[in-house]
Amino acid sequence: MRLKDIGMLLANNVRSTAYLQALVNNNLFPSFIILIKNKEKASIGDTLPYFVQSTELKAKYFDPTKKIKDLAEFYNIKYKILNVEDVNSDELIGELKKSKVKYYVYSGPGGQILKNNILSIGKEFLHVHPGKVPSYRGSTTIYYSIIDKDMCYASAFFLRKNIDAGPFIKEKEFPKPEDGKIIDFIYDPYIRSSLLIDVINEYIENDYKFPMKQQPNHNEGNYYIIHPVLKHISILSCN
Image 1: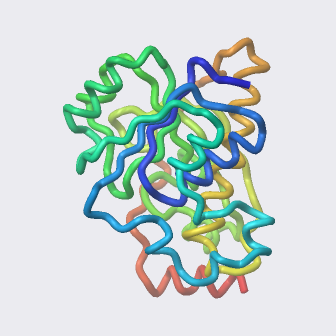
Image 2: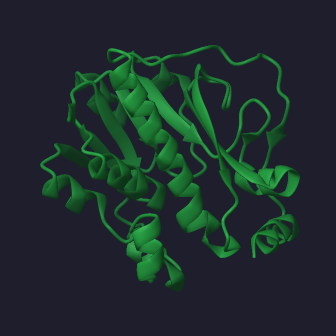
């Protein structure tokens, strides 16, 4: 199925390729992809650890070495590559404004936040967060929830200026992985893409509308990049 009102705003990372693979594997095809690809950055394959080449991992989850451009061409999905550093750049905003697509699945560069100049152009940016909101807002929340709850979570919502506090769509819980070393490059992207498929299917079943509700205004937990010692404890708890 061609999703005429849904596009993708992607960076060259494993989360983006997990999202696109999940969609096409479920016969769901975005109408347009904007790929942010900094010329000076290494390709995905150059930065991945050795274990992602495992045939077993690829069969169970997804293939992190596949390239977004190749997937788009194989499945005849329109795309445009922008060589920009900043996700809030005028060039990207101009491209979005030209597009007739209303909803964009967002998987941008790590550490960059969409600012008001892009959030106010009339598009909706669908984000899948690796944590349960409002309990786990912020960064590297998958590690905190493993330590705290012995579980992993994903939440889908639309982005707003307040971090991880936009209109809520759906959440899902997952067991922690059996191998802690796959969290960053395999399991985190996998659980997000799994929820994304549920969200898109419900959008279709709901007459092409997203069921939304406002999140509570209060912050139950804001998390920052986890300390290496705590991260190591979280990883070891999976093994």
